Amino acid sequence: MRIGELAKHTGTTTRALRFYESQGLLTAPRDPNGYRDYGPAELRLVNEILTLRSVGFSVEETRPFVACLQAGHAAGDACADSVAVYRQKLAEVEDCLARLGEVRAELLGKLARALARQPGTCGVGEADEM
Image 1: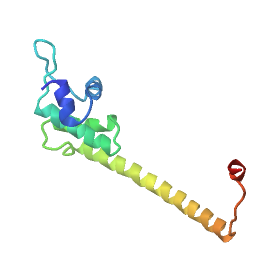
Image 2: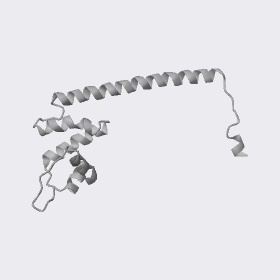
Image 3: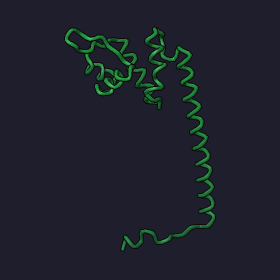
Image 4: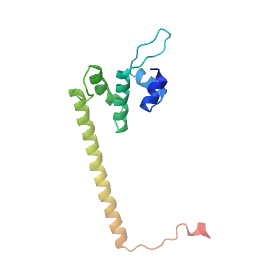
């Protein structure tokens, strides 16, 4: 299939596919006329990349998954390097959740203190209404 067809089947753009190719994540044999000829293996690679990207993986973080598929494994996460990236990404998410929990607690405290003071109107925006 041509690049446009691959883009359509995967829901991405030809520009993104060319970018993945420039990054060494995607390759395709060329027809005698120079057109790329993508097959089921490339379709699978692009779907793997897009799935990982949709949950926050960087292009670089997709490399081990792509390499695993290119090595002939049934799944992109069948290799130790892919599992290591999962662990790293999970640690990043857990750190982010912890920071968000701290921010939430701080905001709840501020709100409680503000409500305890029984805030009234302060006149902000009233001049605009006149």
